[in-house]
Length: 452
Ligand SMILES: Cc1ncc(COP(=O)(O)O)c(C=O)c1O
Image (cartoon, rainbow, N blue to C red; front, side):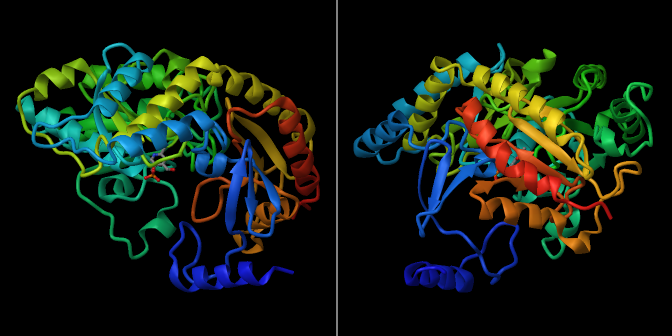
């Protein structure tokens, strides 16, 4: 039974507010009212473990007082300051300097945004602007089928996953985009087995560049670990091969670290796992631990030198000082509290348990991921890897059952994503006891699935 206030809030929401990945006008279940640590609470006072950092964005968990104070102080000081017409502000300069200490050397040039999609559109615009400045017509962008890059024009066109749901009536098809198969080994598009495949998915990138003509390809863009696609980490050879191909054909490499950045995979940026230096990195989410909307595009000296002296573009809220101080403080905390290291050790701890305790269950095809970006593969038939009939709504049922018991987990397999995976991606501040609490709730739910 819900109280009167909750019922009124739910009714108003249902009749007026558009949600992400939820049918317009459909019942919603939870109205969040407050939060602390790795928990959020609804209007009925029920507490949930946030097993997915909501949208893998609340990397530092809730209630980080230092960020809240930094925001309040800057809000009292400046409220807003534009990054146009020759104006800058102290907060954004200090934020850029801090970010410059974290990105790979030589990538300390920035364009600021208010979120992931904006960062992606800005990165693609920047790549084309760069080639134009160099007197080239390279403009096509290659991305992956199982990717998610956001919902602005270019970002949605580049996005490869969930096409059915994202594109129906959304008309996102801009010209100049090409998508190729990803490295989702469990369901390999090329019907290959790792490592005998020789990483055909990476080699295929070279084939496509050759076919399209290297003079037409501005950039290859991908998430270091596919996030919305189901927390899919590539084989170790993948990124070094991709870097080599991009260098060989003079194609810019854009790493979309919107989800993987800021400690999520156990390193500050995921590309560090493979020692890869992209030409452009897109960021958002964890940059402020989601306390305020903010994003950035970091790019190389080479790009900076090529576009120097030209007019580029920015958003009204590019370089917003209040968001900037939230980011600066969050970055200080990531470094000071060794947050990426905790993500690495808690990720290892959780993954061992997933493999040991969940792996043998009849409807689990495997468990894997990187850092605290973990996924459990759900199958109706383990031997054939056959997924459940979508009509059975198994993934949604898993999420609903977990919520009933006070755990929020994200599930892919809804809305046209390529994999049926239960995602475990809690705030990076989590302890091993809290990991156990979450997985103790999840285990009986997945053990209760019946093969079909
Ligand atoms: C890898 C990646 N890129 C871009 C985006 C889009 O970010 P936003 O929702 O802030 O626009 C997301 C969002 O989930 C993402 O995971």
